[in-house]
Image (cartoon, rainbow over all chains, first blue to last red; front, side, top):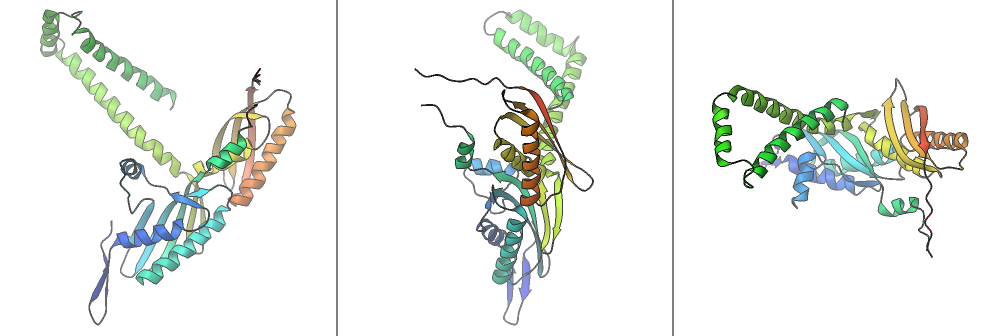
Length: 131
Length: 180
C-alpha cells in the first residue's frame, strides 16, 4: 500500500491514508445500479470466510502527490449494459473521491470480473416441477 | 486440469495412500514392532537415498500443485480491454462466459452447456459444447443460439463477436417423471 498523501496549507498539513480513498471508492462504486459487489482476491475471500471485512477488497489505489489512480474489480448484475455501468461507476467514484479528499482522480480503471446471476433469475431458467 | 496434472495428482495420491496405509497397519499389528524398527533402520541405512529422492519428488509435487493452484486464479485475468475517457474498462473472459451461458440457457432444448471463449484479432470467438434434447430441430436451434449470443454480447458488453461455433456432443436423454 502506498504512503499517506500529505496536503500542506497555511494552517498545517492534511494526511489522507490510502484506506480512506479505498472506502470512498468502494462505497461510490457499489451504490451504482448494476454493481453486485467488489471482487476480492484469494486472501480477501478467506478473510471474509472468517468474518473479517477487508476495506480494500477489489480495489487498488495508486496515490501520488495530489493525484490518484484507482483500479476497481467488480462483479456486475445480470441484465445491465456493461459499458454503461462502467461509465457510471467511473463518474461516481471520480466525483466522490475528488469531492471528499480534494485529490485529482486521473483514472478509474474498471475490471469486470464476473456476472452475478441472482437466484430469482436462476429459478426462471429451471422448468416448473410437475405437481 | 490437464492430463499431465492428472497424472501427477494420481502419483501423489498413490504415494500418500501408501504412507497412510503404513500408519493404518501399524496399530493393527499387521506390521510388527520389529518390522517397523527394521523399516526405520532401512531409512537410515540401505534405502536412505531412495527415501531422500522420494521425499524430494513429493516436495516438488507439493510445490507444483501449490503454484498451479494460484496460477489458475491468474487465468481469470484474460479478457477484453476497452479504453474509456475516464480510464480503462476490462471485461474478463469469465464474465463473457457467464453472459453466454445465461443467453444459451434461455434457449429451449439445450442442456449441459460448456462455453469456451477465445479472443481473436479484433473480435471474440466463442465455442459452445452442449447436449440437445430429442425432437428439437438442431440447425434451427443452433442458428437461434448464435443469433441470440451475437446480439446479446454486442449489445450488453459492446464486444464484437467473431465466430460462434456450436458443437452438439450428443442427444440428451429426456426423462419424464410421472407421479401417481
